[in-house]
Each structure stands twice: as C-alpha cells, then as structure tokens.
Length: 299
Image 1: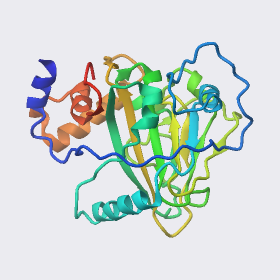
Image 2: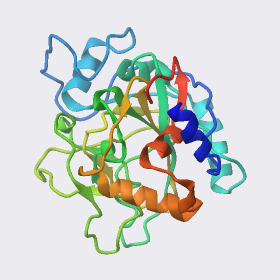
Image 3: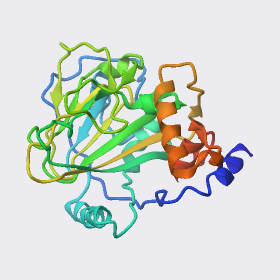
C-alpha cells in the first residue's frame, strides 16, 4: 500500500507526536463582539448535523467561519497541560496533544484525523514586532481537501487579549477561495514559514478574540486570521490542533498557488533528513496525521 511505502521512507524522521488522550468538555454560548448571524440556510454547508451545537451556534459558524466555546477545557486539564508544556519548553519531554472530539466531530464527521498539533509559546516582542503572525488562511499549508471538513481547535491556556497577542479574525472570509500567500515585507522580518495573504480587503471588519483560560475557538481553514505582537513580559501559551475528516483526500499542489509552501517544507525536510529520504509533500502529511476517532480512510 502507498501509505506503507511512505511509512518505510519516513522511519528516519524522529520526534513525531504521540496519540493524545481525551479532555473534558463543557458546552456554553459563543462569544465575539459582532452581530448575530442572519443566515438561515436550508442546508448547512460548514457544519454537520449533531446534538452538540445549538442551532444558533451552527448559524454563527456558517456565517462567520469561527465559533468560540467558553470554558471548554477545565482548569484542572489546563494546569496539567501547562505543566507538560513547560517541560517541553525546557526540552524535558516530548509534546502531547489535546483532544476535544465531541465538538470536532460537528465539523469533520465521525472519522477524525489529527493533522497538525502545536503548542504555541508566543514570546515577548523584542521591539521589532517579529512576534506578529500575518493574516493568513491555514489551508495554504494543507495538501488535502475538502476544506469544509477541516477545522482548527485553538485553546487559550491563560487570559489572552490584544496586549499579549490574541487572535484576530475576519468574519465571513471562510467563504472566499484560497488566496496567494508569501512572506510579508515587514521591517524586522517575520518567523520562518509565517506566510501571509498578499491581497485582501484591508477594510474588512476585524474581531479580536479576547479569551480566558480554557476557552476554545473552532475555525474554518479558509478563515483569514492572524495575531498581534506580544507586548507583555511573559510567554503567551495556547494549544492548537487541526483536525480533518479521514475521508478527505490529498491533492497535488504543483503548479498551484501552494507550490511555494511545498518547496519550502521539502527544503526543510531535505536539510533535516537528507535528500536521500525521498520525502514528498504528501508523505510528510501522511506521517504527521494521527487517527484519533473512527477509521482511517483516505488521509
């Protein structure tokens, strides 16, 4: 099988994420200082039928492309994750992920892959504004589709606001196509692989997501979002995981607007593991993906 052959080529790659354990969840209303959705679809496009999200929550996500669930992760779990997070920062242990599958299934369906897990330790800005993350669409990094069966779960591990660089989203932009991305021409530069959209409506309304410890925002991979600089003296901590339906399929991005990120990722892989590894973009994502619920099908 193709996946088995890919796995054989990838044995040299170390340090991949282990399978995480499930965390407790508590449903509560959405938040966000924007008008409620007036959208009343006969058939929902971006969420699946479920008994977890309310009708108003589903309408909000359909209209805006994101949904904040307050207090989704308990204080006890956040503290447990924070202890492990700090061990990872001190290079004392390998990372684990955060699972909130009850809600994820509302967007992906029952067969769920965890595709990209990050522990985000946003550092204090040095004055060069390099801690900013330019506005972007996460789908730029993913060679799999359909986009409507992919969702990001982003959990605050402490109070997060504009002072320490909260997320900023452009509501409704998940209805737009994928746009070209590249490094922004910022004075002081930007972090590696922090590509940004080169052309977007700068007058589009923005929402800064002020979040408390344990709050989780779910957002669509085409939603335009980013984050500001951390103007505090501490590190801003959050956990992010992208989930996709195991029914999604891989695409060839050569000759598309995603070819630049493919070349950059493969260049990094070649430097880390050598050109003899024979890695391609699809191989990397096959290796990164972990089945967390249901059956692994085409991802």
